[in-house]
Length: 277
Image (cartoon, rainbow, N blue to C red; front, side, top):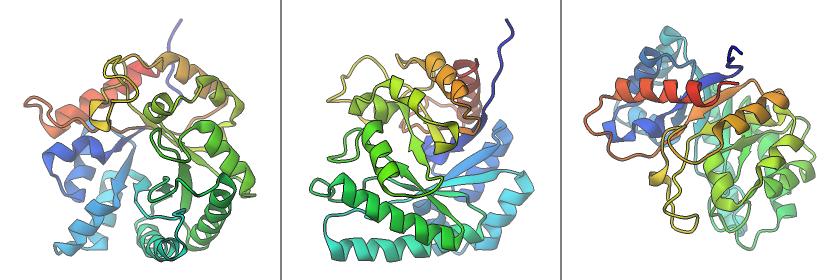
C-alpha cells in the first residue's frame, strides 16, 4: 500500500542552536532544506533587533522564502502563583504578541513557566482564558503547552482539563511526544482530541536510556531513531483529522561536523519517513 503524508512540516529553530545563526539565517536554512513553516524563538528575534536588524528585515525574509511563521517560543510567567509576577508576565506577553503580529506569526506558546506548583488547574484555566482573550484582540493565538517535568500542567489530561475549563471557543494545545513520555501521558488520550484542538505538534524521539527521571531535552533524538511509537502517533493524528504542522524540535548540542542545512534536511526526511501513514 502506498504511504501518504497528510501533514505539513515546520522547523523549530532550537534544532539549529549549535550553529548560532541569526533569525534571517535560520529562515533561509529552513527554506533551503524544504520546510513549509518555522517556529522562531523570541530570544532570537529580540537579539536580532537589538543588534541593529529590523522587523521589516524579518518580515521580508519570511515573504521572500515563502515560509509560514507558525509559532513563537516564548517564556512569560502567565500562570505564576504570585499575582505581581503574573501581571508583569501579561504585560510582557502583550508586547511580544504585538511584535509577533507585525511579523505575521500565527501562534505563541504558553507553557507552565514560572512558579506553578501551588497554582490550581482551575486558576490556570482562568489565566489562560485571559491570555487568549488578550491575544485574540491583538491577532496572535496563545496555545497551551504542557511540560512533562513541570510541577503542574505536566500531562495531556491536565492540559485538556485547563482548556475545557477555560471556556475558550476553539482553544488549542501544543503537543510534544517527549513531554508526553516524560510526564506519563497515555497516547490513547490523543484519540479523545479533535484535530482542530491541536495548534502545533512538536516532533522528536527519545532513547530507552536514560530513563524518564534523568532524561533531558538534550537527549532527544531525530524521529525514528528512538523508542517513540512514531507510526502509531501518526495514525492517531490522522484519525482525529489533524492535518497541521509537525515541527521538528531538538536540542542536540553536537551534529558531528554536519552543516545547518544538512541537519535540517536530515530532520525533514526523518519526519517524513517516521510520520507517513
